Amino acid sequence: MTFQSALQLCIFRLFLLMNADLVLCVGSMRPSIKKADKLFDAKKWSGAIDMYEKCIAGGLVISAEQKSDVYFSLGFACHDLYDSGAEGRNANADKAVEWYSKVIALGQYNETRGLAFRNRGMIETKQRKYALALADYNQAVSIYIQDRESSTAADAAATRFERSFVYRGLGLHDLELSDLQQSISFLTNPKSPKMYRSAQTTD
Image (cartoon, rainbow, N blue to C red; front, side):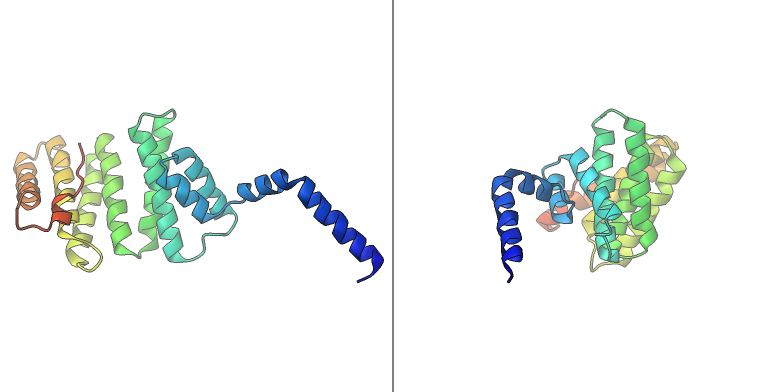
């Protein structure tokens, strides 16, 4: 190593020591799926959305599986902001539907696709877009019934419960009652596995 190279290296190391806080700050600003996931787990929705979108823009979301997970997380975060009544409620609903639609368009990973259909249906139900919601719930139930490996009977039961609200909105009370009876019968059956009986349902 020449004297000039050694001097440059020393100057660079000195710069790093004197500006450690700046280096750490710049490093922390770099987008990563891991950082986005941490923000998501902490329910810091706006930060998670921003980080996930930066990951997509930076070409960090490559595989179909990554896309499915990231798109669904973005949809869920926007969905929760919509449910919470945060500023820009309608825009959050539109973004959630957009991200759920991207999960569905991938045509893979049935467990995530089923949830995307179901959650999109929940938004459409609240918007009283009953025809769209019914189609999405029907797709979700179909996936849950056909794909026993990645789905559970609890998923289908919870979706039927949510679909009953669509039937109520459409005035189809016989179908509403049928869905309610099927879902409640399953969720309250003492022989059902506990993990099934604890399935979340909509308000």
